Amino acid sequence: MVRARITGTGSSFPDKTLTNADLEKMVDTTDEWITTRTGIKTRHIAVEGEYTSTFATRAAEKALEMAGVAAHEIDLIIVGTITPDFPFPATACLVQDNLKAVNAVAFDISAACSGFVYGLSLADKHIRSGTTKRALVIGAEVLSRVVDWTDRNTCCLFGDGAGAVVLEATEEGRGILSTHIHSDGSYWQLLHQPGAGSRNPAVQKTLDEKLVYLSMQGNEVFKLAVRAMEEAAHEALTANGLQVSDINLFISHQANRRIIDAIGKRLGLGEDQVFINVHSHGNTSAASIPIALDEAVRGGRVSDGDIVVFDAFGGGLTWGSALVRW
Ligand code: UT7
Image 1 (cartoon, protein in one colour):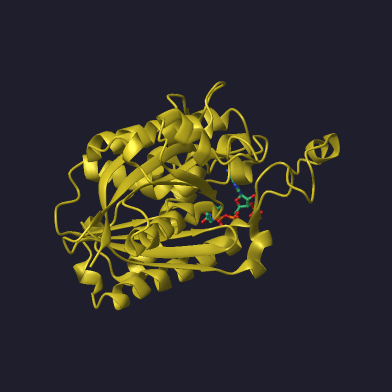
Image 2 (cartoon, protein in one colour):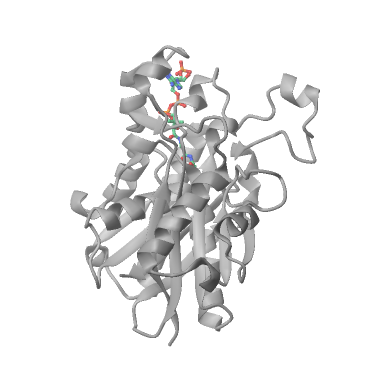
């Protein structure tokens, strides 16, 4: 049976960081509030000349290097992002050009913080069907460009960066065992960017009314996220006849330490099973899971045969999980 196996991981961030102490000087907030409510201490912020494709490309290059795969061997590039370089063409096409991945088909997925798991699910199906041998799945964001830096409710939460994986077809019996993706569009207003699309085009009025900035009803999203991610994790385990105790590493979307802790508690996960890096990156939306995976892999937290579960939730609403035998 053909499966998709992750053979390389990579991540990339801006060099510039913004700490909670820096934010204290910008809006009415405190390190204490941000730390206790979110677990975030610092985040990376892009500077002039750095775009979503910049970090997506660098993360992809590292993943290709780890996999020992040349760019021209890639058949498919999927970028999960809600902060593309341009409305069109797709950031994946810019990455394709940067890498000179001349044989790939490239497109973006807009599934907010679930973008990486959605991309993984799609690439997995391409590989299982035999139409694709090698794929790059990337989560990449420059959220700092859609955040209102005068709004303390949102500006302390987000960060920039990218994570990437190389997937290769294998018959070894390991790799992605299953993926499970879901959406509920009836909640779209809870987390969205009102402006710069066809409804509120990028004209002066849209800028004046601050519609270009991300809008989130945090408290509602928090409750729905915990419930949906708990269900998605169970769904992945049930589909593979596994128990919570079989999980070696649980990598959930890194939006808020309290959300990750709540899911861990509800699932009955031990601290050593859960990977957390939200303190050093903030919420990087679609990039958060592949960044965490890359840090886990390079930090020696993942060994051959390990069961790794990805669990995502984001605007749309979208959510989903993937279960991997490493
Ligand atoms: O990534 C995709 C999905 N996104 C998420 O999963 C995010 C989910 N939501 C969250 O992480 C949390 O809801 C937040 C971190 C956004 C907010 O935490 P909360 O504990 O839900 O706080 P809250 O929204 O209930 O606000 C509590 C208070 C408010 O003040 P009042 O109205 O009670 O006086 C806010 O104005 O905290 C205030 N507040 C702040 N105070 C200091 C909000 N942001 C700040 C801040 N500094 N930065």
